[in-house]
Amino acid sequence: MKRAHLALAGLVVAGALGGCQGPTGPLPPVPAGSGGVLVRAGEAPPVKDNQSVIDRVVAVVNDDVVMMSELQEAIVLGRRDGRNLPDGPDVERTMLDRLVEHRLQVQEAKRDKIEVTEDELRGVLEDFVKRNGGDRDKLEAQLQTQGVTWEALRREMREQLLAQRVRSRRVVRRSTVTEPEVDQYLAQNRDKFEAGLKYHAFHLAIPVELASSPAAWEGAKQEIESIAVALAGGADFAELARTRAKDPAGGDLGWLAKSELDPAFEGPLLALQKGQVTAPIRSGSAYHLLKLADREELTAERLVDARQQARDLLLQKKAQERFDEWVEGLKRRALIAIRL
Image (cartoon, one colour):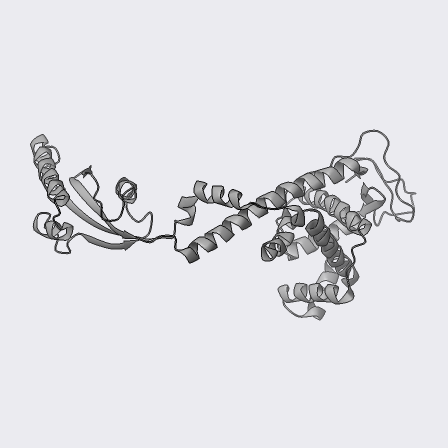
């Protein structure tokens, strides 16, 4: 269970991140020392003729602000880290929505007095360097040309760790799965867990030489029914396949994976118990009989693995649902203004 919780702590990072809507009415004040100006959408920043805007506030999140420079840095780092970001003009709004929700989580982490040590931060930065070629000096130079300083990267990685830990505390650790829930999931999705299991089948066919002839079809039907009666009386399937269906291989199809056979044959075949034979099946050119000689089962070891997979899937689903509820609660209680 501990392993699953650790995996989920990172998994919910990329959970559903909806858009944040700014409150109606007056804009919230920009916190002192932010170094930016807050303007309404479509308005020009209030600067003098001899001034230029080098940065501006694009969102207020409680007592914090998100600057345009931070948004651009986040887009660069997000793409380097392989996050799913749209192309074109939507990328800024998509990333800003994520930044707002991220900032709310970091604020919660600080309220909980969660800390990140220098050693922990160093480990995360080293991992980031490895994912980006392994050469820190080269990576730092590349980031610099994209407008991202090493200090900005350190800040982003530290905040990611803070957010991850508060999610683990508020979401993952409070998400539990019971054994009856696992039992129910396995019962409802047994086919999925048995998808990789193979089966051993035999087949014989009585072809119809002239498909347009009702008499030919009737003759083939009588022959296949005669064979079915013989099989029910204990006759050997392989022997009848050789002698009456003229199959020198004795009808042995070998071990098959699911979906290898036509569904018209595989469905009735897999509904059988070991050793049973299907009723005659008509195709476009013959009558067929199939025998389920053997099939792989969910062994005790495989069942243990299946239960763990089911448990992990259910835990992931519950953690995602709890994460969504938690973030929505943070947003409802927060003072948020989007001014991109």
